[in-house]
Length: 305
Image (cartoon, rainbow, N blue to C red; front, side, top):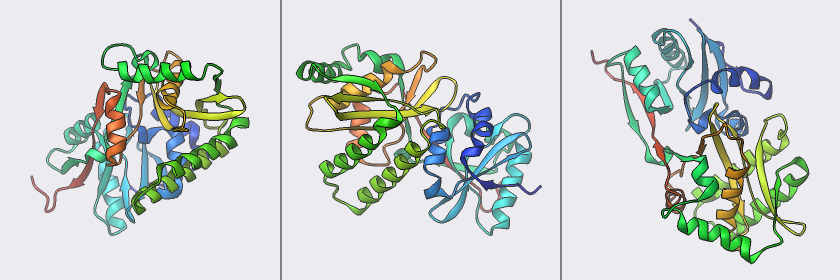
């Protein structure tokens, strides 16, 4: 059965979240804010098909899919996705598949697929309570940094991130990139894409139900962080920036965001490290509760029974 894919737009928010917010999947790729903000890079399309929500996008110039979300028989949906790939003359490729999703796919069509995980695309999951308190010996260094910022800059204010503050946040993000002194084209391209995604998120801030905090000294924003819901209990931290001249600003804004979130969010997904060693060290230093490994799934070739 042909799948009626159509380009993802803001108008699809209710449809997407009807599936994602009720799902047990905590994959950061399923945050509607993320989906919309990065559609420019992936040419993201979606379809509601056989009681499932499907996504098709471009990866290195080829069609790829996210794992289906929904209820009911999965095998017919997978068969239609493989037919969709074949019609385009491309191999079947599914990306960002979590371990529970992989188990469901394997059960639906045993021996039909093979899968491998890429560590660069593993999501980092943290207890929101742990990030809000930074309590305990393992997080003592982070707690010390956050408290040092509060002590060194007693006039600081933590404000909800609202539209009037967004232009100053963009300026800080661009300053942060300059402070990083990016060394490679890969880093430059990654942060240019992030800047464009941030612009999109800010352009649709209220529509996306985004939440965030800004840390201010006087009239200046020295740190900010924001994100949106992935599902009913997991919040996706999409961005976190700070002026590195202010000691402890990163640890402070990270804690402030966790403290600002509703209690319904038990988990924070702080996304992937994309293989950047410095980013990996930073994410590991907060001692994630879980590493959410995500798999690339393809059909066996030739087909193996």
